[in-house]
Length: 466
Ligand SMILES: Cc1cc2nc3c(=O)[nH]c(=O)nc-3n(C[C@H](O)[C@H](O)[C@H](O)COP(=O)(O)OP(=O)(O)OC[C@H]3O[C@@H](n4cnc5c(N)ncnc54)[C@H](O)[C@@H]3O)c2cc1C
Image (cartoon, rainbow, N blue to C red; front, side, top):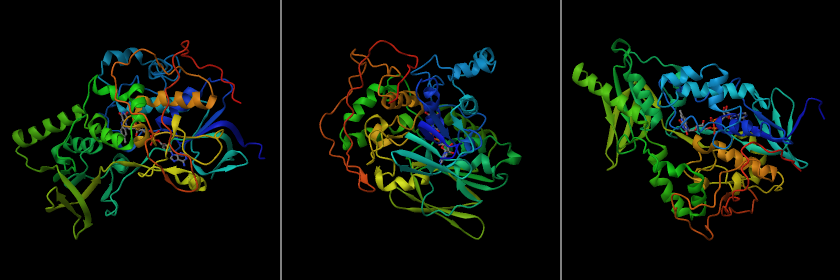
């Protein structure tokens, strides 16, 4: 074996906030060695959409570690302190934190943790002689007993659309920095990314402003996030446990009804857009912005001069509109990274293409139980609306570490007290069968109760890993 080959207990692929949380909470767990690999040369959180005024939709206290280990050195508060910024930050009295600053916090944690490896894209992951082997283009292999897949979602581009310099996904917006002055621009997608781009376009001085702006949304309106303490109850371990007991049809109904608890516009963005629209129309007499809710864009075709955007209303009427630049704020979808191809036949998939997950975020695969593959941000169907959110990142990491260590490394805050909300729970078989890629035969089992509270153990315990 190559001298420089890395051998660890747990290896993570990808260093977005979710695997970074796992790395941060694994740090200091005695007896657990880990390595986390990121293909980019630095950690930057959704750099293509990090507008200077874009803010977190969640509290910064829901950072990499605080919900389960507030004494960890990798908390957002410690980032402020270590960077000599705590008092300045407090004096600013922000309502929340900018995404730019949160991204900087993530990069700070990635730089400080000893287990992280940047510019280390995993090309191939397979399972050989009871271990996973990760291969890279530019470094020696890594062998590990368990894998954490944290490669995020991939940008969704409608199949009928051919991208190019004049038509690209919103995730590239600030990377490409398109010329917007005097051009006819269409933004497709009525979610937060679309709204942030529309706000950015409206904020330009008139001499650098687009010639026209059309904003299309499949939704029947421009809905803001549903917020508040009662709505936030969906983003708790209690609700997650209840969700896991539901049959698939109830889960689907729950996901649909909770859509705007997680996927609406930040109110400050929506208000900012509306105020600029008001000023533009009534104070400056400009009628160059059009909002098209309830339109499904079905084609974006090249025409002689620019692109023709073809959309359809709910009653089937077709409309066309011309644009020089089309931004596809059409969201993201779960995806399995191509580096897992050697394992593809052994993994079960959800209908949406995500890894099918069993209890404790273990992917369903036909390998030994002693070699788990954990799926982070793969569980919107199986773990609910909270799964793609920062809210439970630290808690999920703690569940994974407890599972892998085979003991309670972190206290998950369970209590035998009656929960504040008596969520509907449903017992019995879900009847749901994951789509099998290959010969996997295991099925999703119901989440059993999380272990009940023992002595409080907020700090990581030494975990002897057998
Ligand atoms: C613009 C935007 C704003 C958001 N804001 C919020 C918010 O305020 N609050 C909230 O709760 N949620 C928010 N979300 C949702 C969610 O928190 C984020 O999408 C989050 O980044 C998901 O983290 P992740 O770790 O799963 O994936 P990502 O952040 O996408 O990270 C995955 C990483 O894996 C790397 N990678 C992929 N393949 C490989 C490979 N083969 N080898 C090595 N590395 C690889 C990628 O380079 C990437 O760095 C936001 C999402 C977006 C798009």
